[in-house]
Image (tube, rainbow, N blue to C red):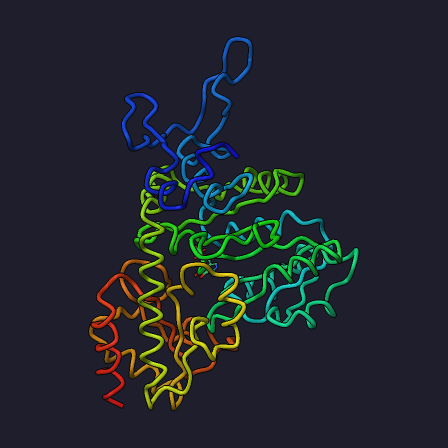
Length: 382
Ligand code: PLP
């Protein structure tokens, strides 16, 4: 790590590690559209790149910035968060035993409980918030990977990363962490022992709801990382150059957005926790949340911008509240500048374990008092 990468996240992000337009020294790096690169007469590639499915110079600034923010050795961007996550599983030897959380982003759960078997992966879901359950499920010498997500969709269950890494490593397994919701501003999983960090960069990293992207960061540039790089090269789930450029632009304001969204979410969570029509607010920043003590140790500068509320009543009540808001947007996804409200079971489909009375809230950058007032007026219609 060079001196510049030791700087604070705000400095690293605002200046995008000092990335420049290589031709004119402009303070914004250029977009590179070429799909192929020239060979020299001696048959070498003087620019170090041969074809844009392998790599593109536009990927370099966001990958370098993310690696620096996470304290990793290297990063790779992907065409989506799912492409990034699947590259981790697809790079495992066939027949690998994999442990993943019961509470996890549903797209990953659906893939692990279906198509993963076609690759020969043997996947078991465990309660990742319970180290004893993890310890029991680990098969020393056989479990190749432990997948964690913290805080985890959609009830923001917190996993103790240091303990999970310790248990995984003792059994000879690697630990990969979906850190989409925490972002490197609030948690740096590699510092807690993780081998890989995954992001849906569609969310906070880009932050403006206009790019679908994914990313992986590795603690070590080792053989498993090279296999992941090979999966990206062969499957071609790479970002378009414009998306890579937009991603870097979004990341320049990441620290500012994430801290503000976390403080606004804490405000919303504390206010809603007192509401008579709400049975439970799921937010790791609330003192009575089961993950609060671990989150307070593991997350720095806030508990994230995501919370969920369980309402008195069933799906119809929850959908009615979502119908009555004026300010919150009814939409899936998270981590953008505008606040979103979502009846989570509706998007996850019939196989979803998510309770029907649950609304998921992604807190944006609007005035926090106005966000609370809007929810209160919607709840008052019940
Ligand atoms: N992981 C988490 C925590 C997510 O919220 C999402 C998307 O909602 C994904 C992974 C998948 O990312 P993408 O939609 O960019 O493929």
